[in-house]
Image (cartoon, rainbow, N blue to C red; front, side):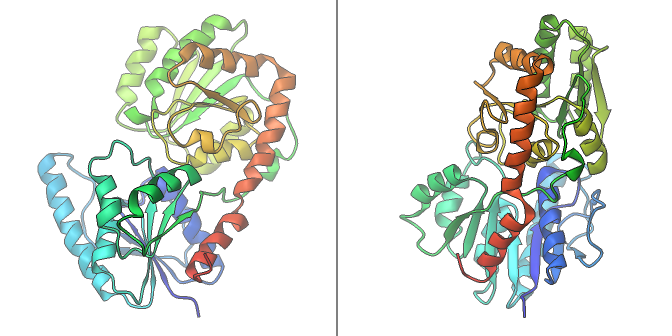
Length: 367
C-alpha cells in the first residue's frame, strides 16, 4: 500500500511553484496515492486541483498586510503550526517546498517518514541558504533539485557535512503535450511573455527590448504580457515613456487555457528574467511549437532552451541582440518552422510519465 503524501506549501496563489506542485499532486492522485496539500496561508487562486486531493489549512492567516510586523507575526504562527503538524506524522511521505520548511522537516520529522526537500529557485544571492544546505538538512532523505548543474554545485558544497541526504535531479514537467499544436499553423506577428509582474522577471527591460525591435521592424508587431503583480504601475509608466502603447498590451491574469490559446497565436516567446530556476512556462511554449528567446542567466533557460535549435539564448542584458532575434523569428519563416518543430520535439523530453516515474522511484527507494 502506498504511503500518503503531504506537500508543505505556503499558499495556492497563482505562481510557478504552486502550479508545479498541483500538477504533480494531480498525477499522483490519479495513480492511486492519497495526496494532501498542507498550506500555512488561506490564499487559494488555482482551480485545476483534483477533487480527490485534500487541502489542509494550518492557520487562518492570509498574505494580507505587507508590513514587517505582520510578516514576522505570520512567520511565527506558521512556524509553530508546521512544527506541530510535522510532529504528528508517521509512516508518510512529506514533500517540503521552501527552505524554511525544509529545515523544520529535517528537525522535527521522525525517520518513519520519507523526508523530501525541494529547491525551486536559484540559491545564489539568498543569504544564509548555503549554510542551511550544509548544516540544517542533515535528516532530509532526498533533496530534489531541478537541474544537474545546480545539483553538482550543491553536492560539492554539502558532501563534507552531510552523508545521509541524496541529491537527485527531478525537472518540472508539462501536464500534457498540446496535441492542438500537432501541426504548424499560421501565426500572428505576436511576441508573448507570461509571469508575475515583479522586478526579477525583467519586464521593464523587455519593454526596452521591444522599443528597439519596433525600430528594426517593417511590419506590424505586437507584444502581449500576461500576468499581474507589483510592477504593473511601473510597466504602464514605462510604456508611456517609451511611446510604445500601440504595440504593447498588458493582458492581466489569464487562465492556463487562455495562456495556451495566446501561445497558439504567437510567433515568439520572450523571457527577460534576471533569475530563474526551471521555468515551466518555457516548456508550455515549446509544447505549443513556440520558439523562445531568453537571457542566458546563471541557471534556468539554458537547461531548457537549445540555442539556435528551439530558440535563442542571449548574453545577459544584450538588448540589441535580443531585439534582432525577435525580428528574425518574425520575418524568417524557414527559421521559424525549424525552431517550431524542434521545440515541440524538445517538449516531449519533459512528459508526465518521464518525470512522475522518477518521483515514484524516489518513493520506493530505487534512486
